[in-house]
Image (cartoon, rainbow, N blue to C red; front, side, top):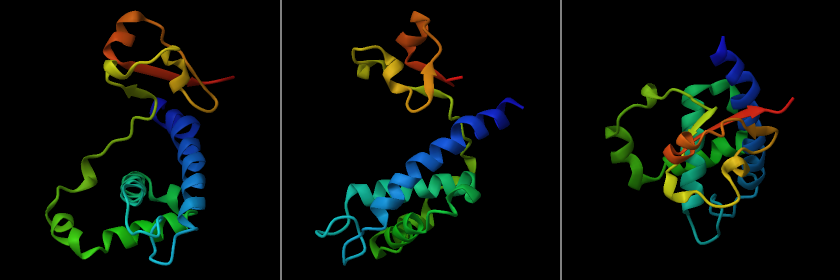
Length: 142
């Protein structure tokens, strides 16, 4: 029950929010089919990777983002990637955990971590031991 609630209240809205932004960028690809006119970039790989992960976990969530899908397909069609794609481990082992984020303690900045909960979410765990371990828990605002 908690998993379904997390999925519907946090994960699904986050995918929609961020993929809407990615869709806008992906729909404006250059003549070469990638985000930058100079060719493929880390941004193209990042978007393709994110698309692949979300699509593996919940394919129904990415159906309304055709430009992101097309960009990912162009990236994964690169001849230089074919050997890697054929020999890498499958993505079947992925399991979503959209509420609890593990963040390396060395990247903590001031003001406090509550800034890392985005959108309609607040930081709910102020225990110092969790902050030191880099654990951030966000909950949807009421």
